[in-house]
Length: 222
Image 1 (tube, helix red, strand yellow):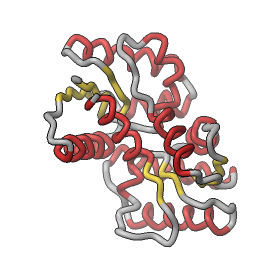
Image 2 (tube, rainbow, N blue to C red):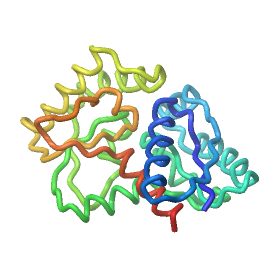
Image 3 (cartoon, rainbow, N blue to C red):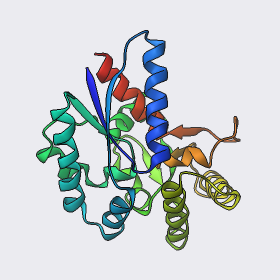
Image 4 (cartoon, helix red, strand yellow):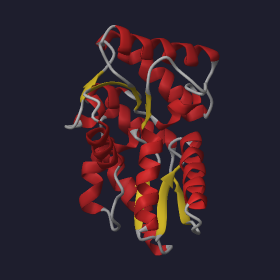
């Protein structure tokens, strides 16, 4: 199946999905048919912070139309944060959507973790990963969400993590485990792989972008 990705939201996340899919298809000894439409990260951020999900969905629908014209049979967003508008996008999308939220529901149901902490954009954290039903999701205290969101957006737009950003998110993850009782930390923003780049951590890490990429590969491989 020819897969379409809406990328550029941000650039490092797009590269993450691309590398993950190339690796998964190589492991399956199959040829990857893929087209990426490059969206505007700053435009997404504006609509995300304003809560304008219908406006962003309409923009994404235009990219979906382009991908369909290019021969794609299904499409995915290369950003967990961008899923804030997926309920508005689904009914107007001209292609089937491979949702990261559906992939996460299935993943948490399968592994049986009951309580996870989430990091990502403010929308991801405040909504507890957009209201997943198969796991209890906890987040940072309200007074810390603004700083977490600002660090995440800066990292996503620049495509790199500073020492300060790494330290912030590592401390936040430790707080989710030690203070809020999470049994694992969910990277609810794809670009968080930039901050969590060590081989090991003293707590389980759930990479939501990787889980989504694996779901995309399953659909593409049929």
